[in-house]
Image 1 (tube, rainbow, N blue to C red):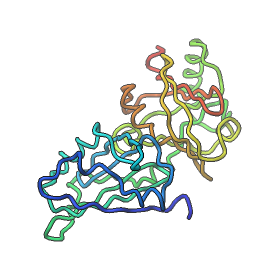
Image 2 (image 1 turned 180 degrees about the vertical axis):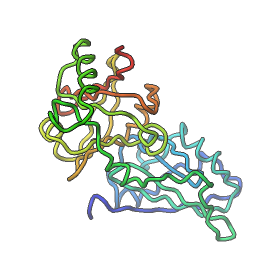
Image 3 (image 1 turned 90 degrees about the vertical axis):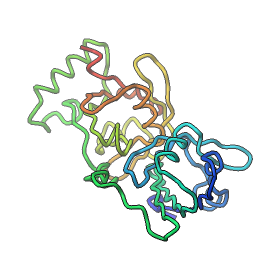
Image 4 (image 1 turned 30 degrees about the vertical axis):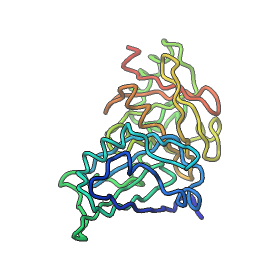
Length: 256
């Protein structure tokens, strides 16, 4: 099966059932379709909100951990009898959830909750090029020179990639995308692998690095990294490549 395929399973929420009783992912789903689920995933329901979740693995298989799943369960307003479909988008470590009431009608997304861009469209948005990556590729090189000077003064050396965060990176999709560049091809893995993100204090988070033909992305753990480091829309970040499996993320506002 191709890595871009999506796989689904369903659960029926029984009347009086608690969130703890609904967290188990069917063993046959992971056995037949996704044998190696990542540690961190995102989940989106009809309310349009994205929930970063951690998966637990034990002898019985995989389940959603309480932190995150409990919030999703309560926000979804389960009353009992709902037929709930989970569709897993493997390249992005992301679950889309559709909920059908006992009447057979699907709960529709709330007005204003639909993203104006699809997941694949968001991942195609290019990263801001640095002068070291594309020496003549930008009309705003003066601004990039300022960032380069800031990084140089802070002792941060190339290779790095500069990226301004959007709502899709830290509020909605929780996937960090990069346009394809010689920097990524030269320094990072050529196939999907887990790598480590470090913050300025040296704390580490494991994420999935997914290289593709026209772009690459960080998923399966990026949401937790963004949340625990307080990243927000319009933050300018430098992704400094330390090794093939390590990237240190610098928030440039912290360097001023």
